Length: 372
Image 1 (cartoon, helix red, strand yellow):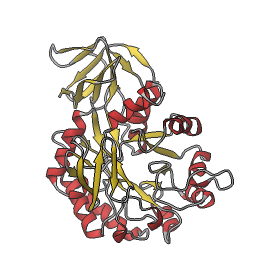
Image 2 (cartoon, helix red, strand yellow; image 1 turned 135 degrees about the vertical axis):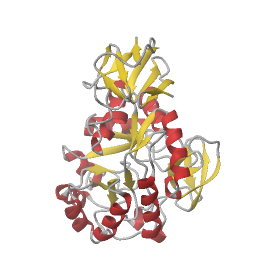
Image 3 (cartoon, helix red, strand yellow; image 1 turned 90 degrees about the vertical axis):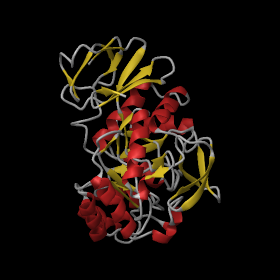
Image 4 (cartoon, rainbow, N blue to C red; image 1 turned 30 degrees about the vertical axis):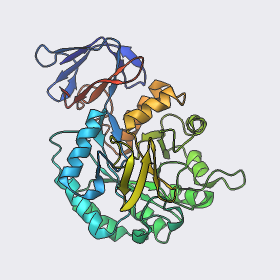
């Protein structure tokens, strides 16, 4: 396959006029399989996106712990230009989490978005900031428990979220530093506690601003602790529900485009109509992009990562070049898969998306070298 006429997103974070060649499942310098030529005129060609934090879609949830649910999710995400995924667990007991881990390990990645990791969002969180997580299963950070789950998953857990103020959290951070991405989440931590956690090995912030103390000029909190550190990354949900556009723009000023990671945080209603759904065993009401528990607590999102990227550009004033970096490049780097995915580079897996230059709507998705 040869793609001609498109403006191609480069590793330098700019768009260039050039041809892109694909042989088999990978990008190549020259050639391309057969005589197939794709007309990219009027389109941008960007790398396939990577969502490292979402729970479900099309009526299925990763925590169903079944091959059927994983495949439905993978198929939907691929259709939306999200070609690599690291779905997130919810707060459940070890038995349920083990079943989820084993189902992910057994998934063969024969079609749909490539499952390349798991994000462990619960249960090592604060009861006071549990949000839509089920408080019944909250558990203090436990190294032995996590390592049993990691073994059951075949090493698929790439991120572990935790509240650093909880008993055992600092010991967990020191034990798992360098083995997995450690992220502050669902926390009551103040600036000093978050700073200590970052110094101990935390490098990531889960859905920044949500389920954590806000910025105060005398109590700066975990957000400022993360922005102070030159390496700490921040997830953002750009669905126009979780975060005000002005805050998104200012987050880029605080963190810089290399440390911002767009996520969708979608739940099972994504891709379906408004109605009653479920998240973490709790009923959720979905109206438009807003998903809430019965008490009004925001319960994930009802969108997808491509829509979030488009919203960031069209409604929040984020330049497309930066938005692509935050949705395709940075998440792949974060979970250690950038050697294979996340850029249109010879030798990497040929995952890419053609977007209309005016609307940013999808004109075509290429997955493992094949046009979907």
